[in-house]
Image (cartoon, rainbow, N blue to C red; front, side, top):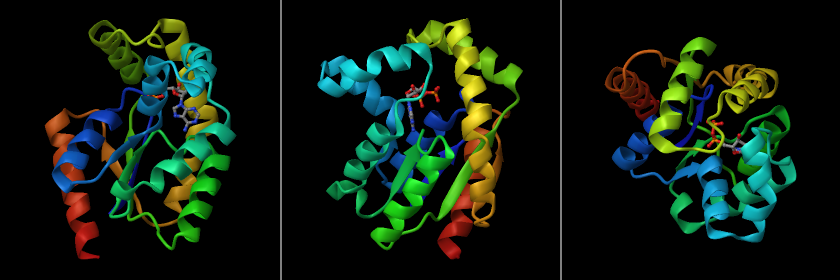
Length: 191
Ligand code: ADP
């Protein structure tokens, strides 16, 4: 299965994606995790993107698209994947469509975790205490949500048009949301 998770920060995409990855034996490909790993390892990429992540802005498309292109070519992604944090704007969505078309693959489902801003902000602030992420300060959270609405939310329509968008109730608790995910993926399996 080739899956994509979409939704605002704090919607629980990462948590659900990790669970799906474990249960369905798919690599969890998270651009945010990849950038944070590069920063922790002190690579050239890490040095370049560190200030961008700290500010809440988006890493340039060229870098992000190249990163995903390479990653999807890794042997563990041949049998499927779950993409988390990419695409984040229309240009990246187009690049992904092209990439998948070139290798003769398509997305099976786009899991859309929708959440009101006030709940998203509240969840991110409490996560900040637990995880100590540098970009979970009130100002940067506000900036990230603004970028989500301006750049990422429009791609929901891009995917709705494919008929493969699965809206989920991200405001519910983790287990309830996960059972919605399982129901949706069960239907994908039977398609
Ligand atoms: P969140 O969704 O909570 O903002 P992520 O871990 O997905 O967290 O992303 C953290 C940061 O990594 C983003 O704010 C951005 O700077 C960068 N990033 C992640 N994915 C992308 C992407 N697809 N395009 C550009 N920048 C990205």
